[in-house]
Image (tube, rainbow, N blue to C red):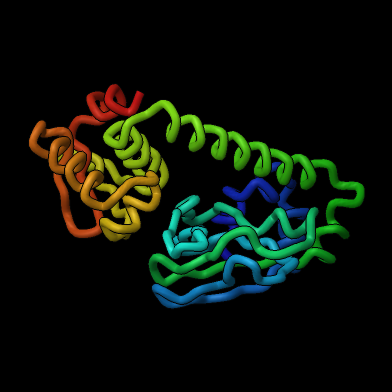
Length: 225
């Protein structure tokens, strides 16, 4: 059990060591290989999940088969919390982007911890508020921002969570295909590729397989506004 990863999760970061260790004892563990699905949109479920290792994508599929990525999550980030408060069909499909490990917490175990522990409840409320704020930002970006701006913003977000600073720039191993990156910003692959090629020609970044090296984050940030 990686206590450092758990401390990143909203459920645990406000708890003292004893309470965090006791709650961790209620967690189950799951491992998936890259490309495997944890659950599908519409499935029933009552568990919350915390990413321990690797990356997952949360996506939805329209009636005509088009796919949209809602989020890419990594170590310490949670999902599935909606089912704890509003039991019903899963709102997204969760797929392993890399080999991945999860911690899981059942509805009943969490309810036992919520009783008399406001810090745990506050952590969940913070997570839900963050998810709502992100959803509002996505809607706003789709209305007011062009595709290059959305691509720049997505890359900076991925860099903030998965980037590693080196002498030649910020190495961002996002592990996404070009199609998945396009789904993440709500645009066609061709339009996203054109934006990436333009950024590369300007010297703002360097493209690598399933990753980028951001060499001028300030210019990229200005383009994201």
